[in-house]
Length: 99
Image (cartoon, rainbow, N blue to C red):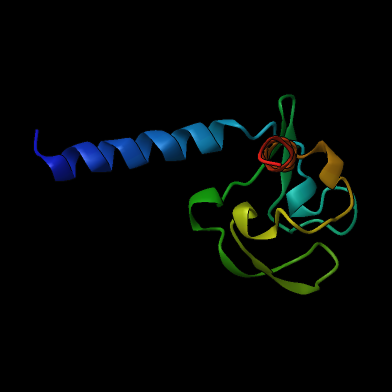
């Protein structure tokens, strides 16, 4: 295996670790206000049926347009239910541990 393949595998592993942090609270998708029209709920929590293609212009249940962005881009912001977000908790912990 060459260096490029190792690096690609490393990045894929890190991306999977990041994705696994999600506890499916739905907060980042508006579950506690006007949710994305694609947001669904099952017995394990919230999920997005178009997850792989979710980024870009979307609409809420009430018809408001918004841009779906990677959660990494909004971790410094606050939104209804954001205290539930495992990504925010991890980022907050990381920021406090670096002081």
